[in-house]
Length: 70
Image (cartoon, rainbow, N blue to C red; front, side, top):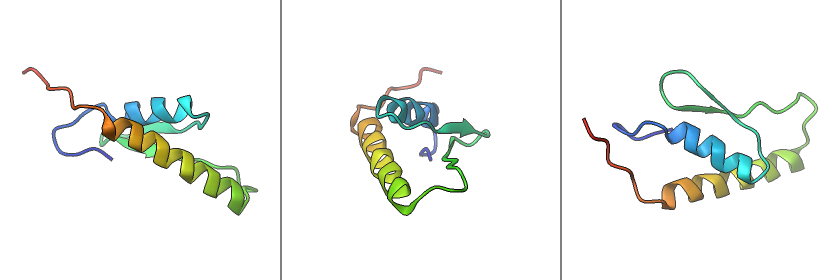
């Protein structure tokens, strides 16, 4: 989910998704965002969640990158 050398992207996406009322989880050491719908999810609900995820990604990717001081 993140580009090489960029850390915290998954957390930023998760935070942005929550601002749009979508709960997603971060996992693993490789900047992973997990979407865990219930087994009885409808196509309309998945479509709505994906639209919300697009908005969250756009929010994160539109912000200027922070430089990491080493």
